[in-house]
Structure formats: structure tokens, C-alpha cells
Amino acid sequence: MAAAARLAVAGHRVVVYERTETYGGAVGRFERDGFAFDTGPGLLPLPAVYRDLFIKTGKEPLEECVELVRVDPAARHVFPDGTDVLLPNASRAGAVGALNTALGSGAGDRWGDFLVRAREAWDRTRRPLLEEPLWADWQVLGEREPYPAVPHRRLLRTRRASTLAEIGAYELRDARLTALLESHALAYGLDPRTAPASAAVLPYMDHAFGTWYVRGGMRELARALYERCRARRVEFVFGAEVVRIVEKDGRAAGLELADRTVAEADHVVAAVAPARVAGLTERPLQEDGDVRPGRRPALAGRFTVLLALRGGPEAGAAHRTVVHAPDRAAELDFLSGRAGAGDPARPTVTVLRPDDPALRPDDGHESVVVSAAAPLTAGREAAGTAERFAELLVTAAESAVPGLRERLLWREVRTPAHTARETGAEDGSVSPPALAAAEGRFLLPGNTTRLPGLYLAGGWAHPGGGLPHAGMSGALVAGLIVEGPDFRGSQ
Image (cartoon, rainbow, N blue to C red; front, side):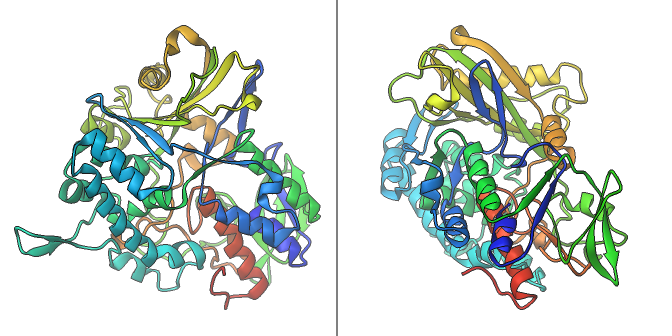
């Protein structure tokens, strides 16, 4: 939709063909008995991406189309040793002070120093990984680790972390700070033992640009963008499954639908997984080679438990609470598939408690979303695994929600299989943002393909998953179509 709105403003006639019966993809909603829950992203980082989109596509700015609420504190973190800390929104000094108080003198200072280095990695990668089409020589992005080396006083030399886990071990030197760092990667199903140190940009984005909530739920953002598209005369055809991308004279020339209808087009934008796109064409879409963007297999999906509770939230309840795993090694082994699929480990759990009347029947009730990264097989291979894993999530959520068990009316369990059915995402996997280093294994396929006229957008194309990145992919595709292959990026 981000690409469609921009292209329509540029004078193109745009038609969106959607396999399901509604818009929004993974930005979905579940409703029952007066309760409503976001089934995809629950918070909005980097809202500037959508502010820019609404400014460029109409007279009404984003804030006139949805109500943005700054989440403060940004998060409450509950650690296995019982330590509990509230981190303020977008305040380095505030975070340093809170961590020094909760974890001991010096802990917050080490976190503050880390954020300074993470900013350096952000400054080095922001433009090529978020605002420009993927470079033709993308290998350059995989060769050098943008996260800076750190001087080691005792060894009288510098030491460069190559993974996120090594940042924790070398620089943070506190299991709780390490858990805080790694939780940002785990939210995308990334194993910090293999994720490059450049993933430090994920907590930096959270810190630097703040965390925001859309009143009424994140589905309201999808609704506002859908309405902006309609106002720009974008057409939507729902229940329309594409079975083939039509080629003519060596370029994409339209779509064939399941009912054998053919829609002609000058350009085709595909917002589905590249493997699915490749199955719709008569040729491979990417260059051959052992290492290329998108070659890294997806290993994890999102497992969610929706809780309908009696009784409203207590005064001062944190909007977001992260309950950290009691056994880091067991969590990571289960997430990476090294442990048996039927033997789930307690994961790092995110609990969202938006104090929003639009999501509950009345003030005497509360809707809560509990989620964690999980292997794609969770709830599918072994009988009862889904219920056992859901129980682990609910048990963790008790640390965030007082009296949860006594207040519980019902719960709805959603596994990666739900994501696959509802969005078409391959196996229900979570798409991470593009990251530099690691020989390019954490880059995503570029927005252009080997088939002229065919473009890739959305979470499974450059610059990757997450609401800001999806919005930027729309800007990049629109720029490539409007300005041609010489387009050098968003301004």
C-alpha cells in the first residue's frame, strides 16, 4: 500500500490484487466478545517513515489520520533474578540512570557507552540499508562490520565484536544487560549468537526515535493507509489470488489470476516472499551464487497468546513489559532448532497492555497480547507443543500482569501456522530488517529483479521486515518506477 499510494500520486493507475478478503497483510486484528487484539506489530518505531508517506501522498498529515501516542516508559524489563527496571522513552541519560539504580553502579554507564557505538553503526548503515535501493555491489555491505571496535585497556589493543552475543560478553559484561540487548534481536527471531554485531542498530532505533502506539490498535494505521490509497484512486481487488506473472517481450506485462483472468500492466510490484514470486515466473529472479541477499533460511516465527481479562489495568501499568528467559542457552537452542520440537523452553516474552478503550468491552476488562519468537515447527510437529508453549508464555506474563490467572476469561493461541495462512508468509516466518556484515547473509533481495518491470516490496525485500522498513520499501519501489534505474534513494 505504501508503494501504491506513492505511485498513484505520481500519476499511475494502480490496482492492488489481494489474496485474502481484507487489506493490511500482517497488520491484522482479532475480535471476540467485545475484545480486540493486534495480531501483528503492536508498536510503531520510527514514525517518521509514515509521516513522510502521508505528507507525500495527501494534504492530511499522519496525525490527522490516526492518533499517535508516545509510549512512556518505553518498556519495563523483568529479569530472572527478580530485578525490575523501567526504561524511559528516547532518553539515553534516563536509561543510564535507571539501569545504574536497578542493576548496580556502572551497568547503566556501560549501556550508555554501547548506545554511542550503536549510533556509529546506525550512521554508517542508515542510508544504504534503509533509504537507498540495494547496491549492485551489495557484497561490500557484507564485508565490513559497521559496529566499531572497542579499545581493551588491559590488552592494549582493540577488540571487534562480530556478533551481537559478543557485544554482550565483551562490552556489557552483565547477564541482564546482555538479555536487554539480545531481546531486540529475539523479537525478529534472530539468534544473537549468529546475528552480526550490526544488529546493535535495533536497540538504538528504539532508544533514539522512541516507541509509539496508534490509538485503536495498529490496525488503525493499516486502515488509514488503505483510505489514503482509495483517496488517491487506487483500486483494490480482494479474494484475488495471483497464479502467474505474465511476461511479454522479455518483461513483466501483467498478472494471471486463479479464475484465469489476465490483468495487463506496465509494472508489477510483488509484496510476497521471493520464493513465492519465483514460482509465479518463468525464470529465476536473483543472480546465482553461494552467498546472496535472501539466501539465509528463515528459522523463526511469532507465537502469540491473546488474553481476555476481567478487571481493568492497574494504575501505572506499563504498556510493554519484556520478561526475560530464565535459561538463555535453552531458549536459543530451542529457537534455533537444536532442541527437540516437542520440548519447548521458556522464551523471552513481550507483554503488551495498551490502555485503550477501543480494545475492550468496557473499563472493567482488559485485552493483553503476549508474544515470543518460536521455531516454525512450534505447535505443528509434536502433539500438544502449542499448548505447552502457550502455557510457558502465560506463566511468564504473570510477572507483568497482576492476578492474571484469576482474571482470565479466555485465551486465543496463534502459531506461525496462523501467520502463514493469513499472510502467505512462507511457513509463517518473521522477516527481520536487513543488517550489514556477515557476508551479506542478513541482507534481503533487492527491489529490482532480473525480469524487467517486476519489483519486490514488503518485508521480504530490501530493506526487510518491520513497519518502518516495509514503508521504506514502498518508497524505494515507487522511486525506481517513477525515476528509473538511476534512482538513488529517498530524500
